[in-house]
Amino acid sequence: MEIFSASNLETSERAKFLSMVNALEILTNRKKHNKEINCFIDHIQIFLKENEEIDNEMKHNLSSSFENLKKE
Image 1 (cartoon, rainbow, N blue to C red):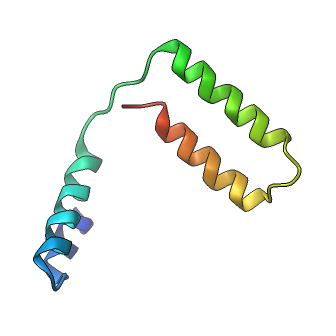
Image 2: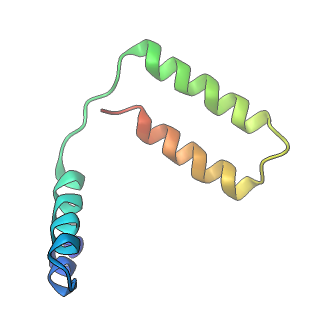
């Protein structure tokens, strides 16, 4: 609701529209992908955790993004 309200503060019509779309996307119910896709994403996350070259903050950000990929 805050994003939708804040969209009125945007100066350009394009920014207002994108803010409103973003607010509506948050409200949608996303279904999960099939088991195979979620398993693949789980394997990527395991690989990410084991990688010592990536700092912990980036690992956390990537892991959150991967969790988001589990839903359509």
